[in-house]
Length: 244
Image (cartoon, rainbow, N blue to C red):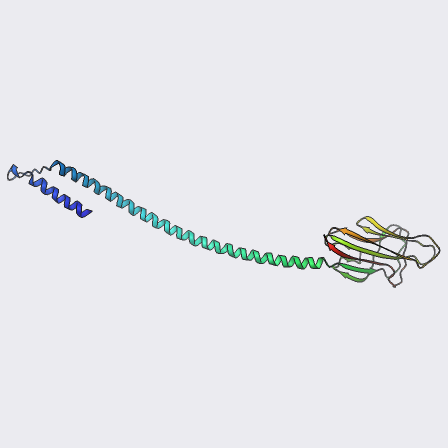
């Protein structure tokens, strides 16, 4: 394009000089033909426009290069974030599997519940109602029964079976009353308070739905007593049937 501008300028100059030769030697005035001058003006304007367009194009190319560089950087950052997210997802999945395994182990441990305990010695009478402490442990799977208090505490919500036996006071007038308690509520009783015979025993049982934290125990009524001499006549047992 610049070569064309140069050529047009040379032609225009020669036209301007040649067209005034009739004025004689020594005349320096050069008068352009009207068409030639117009064309030169247009060429000059086009040259300015081309220079402006070239500058604009260069600026756009620089901006595009900068944008491409930024996009490359953003792409690298996105790939890094994607890798981090995938790593976190794998870590979360591993933790979820570990928690699931731990939950399975915990459930297995808490769902295995069974115990039996015996008094081993005579108890009573007392001036007030008293939980019987069956301190001779026969079995205590799941450690739900506490021999120090005589209380079984449910660790999981479920349906449980409980049974206890009672041997009367074994001498004099019968004087034995027991109740199996759920929290503070009596559920079932055994009585032996009349008659002239000794060596009487009784038992009772119940199926209870318990929430975790509920307690079950056997209560000796006030001024009553039971007999035991190590023969395990008085026992307290229970086990989990199923969770709910």
